[in-house]
Length: 168
Image (tube, rainbow, N blue to C red):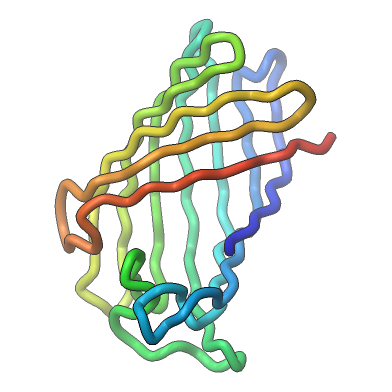
């Protein structure tokens, strides 16, 4: 289970440029003996920017530092660890960029993520596609997937689903 909180720190008129900061956390869910679930806590502070240079187009960027902590509060072991479906290093830096086409309530985003693993040979680059739908009010649902394109192959492909709510 993962949760995030994001705070908008800067916004220009009509959303020409948005800057946000936040933190994401992962909880040790699943059965680690079967390779499902992380078995440890994760803490990931992040910064994000986006711009809307033309109607129906959003370009975004994200940078985050992911820290894995042992389930008892001690640091996790060095090297690859975590779930079978999402192995990772103890400390990683992720940088991502993407572009989304927005039409009414729908959006489709193509992106790429580069991961630099600290003290571990797990650097990787992946390409992603996400599709989202804005529900009435301030709710949004999305599904997406990613495939590795360079570096360490951490997975064959990855899927995700998310629900978001916006507070003012």
